[in-house]
Length: 294
Image (cartoon, rainbow, N blue to C red):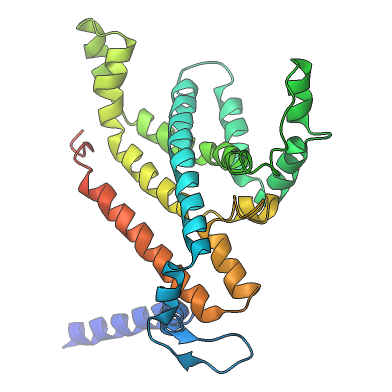
């Protein structure tokens, strides 16, 4: 009887300490999500009365050429951003995993962009991309090449934004790869050397399989980051020129806070959620290459 009373008292105290977190979760996470899902079926412009219109917001976005434009830009961004960041982070991690002098300093240097404000980084890169006095075109002029207007060209604007995102994203993923590389047993490499395996064979047969769970996790996170990119295009181009750098999250922001169409913006947000969900499930479907037993 005493044990039951004590257990009930412990449960009561546990509930007491967990209550603030649960209330916060309901008020600031689950509640807004449910509210956004409901208003995605309404025509609600701020300042006017909300009206239930069913799936009309979803139907309109599918027939809107701008939606397909921003979705295409987002996919192009992902196609460039994901492999460049993944391969770049892996190469840097492999180099910084070597026992060379000063590697801690180099690791810090590569991680610095991660902790630097995207606003500050975007301002610096905007200056570097400037066609008149920017560092990049000045460097190209030294070898006789006339650089384009990086952020004003419909051809170069999106790749320019991708370069900034890759530069800022490599550091964080490098740390994840480093953790994966350092978990590989040195005895495996030693055994492979004794068997006569060269550097490439050791990398292909030992390193890649052993870090495959880390690679898979990074792939999923890069996909989510690519489809949620906002800061870089917003700070550098505002979606221009001619919507060439307008991505889906920026389109949601413009719909909600420039045109005040909260119902349409909510439907766009949930469409983005389902797109990310589908791509993530596809990744899991084709994840047989991931070696969890390594």
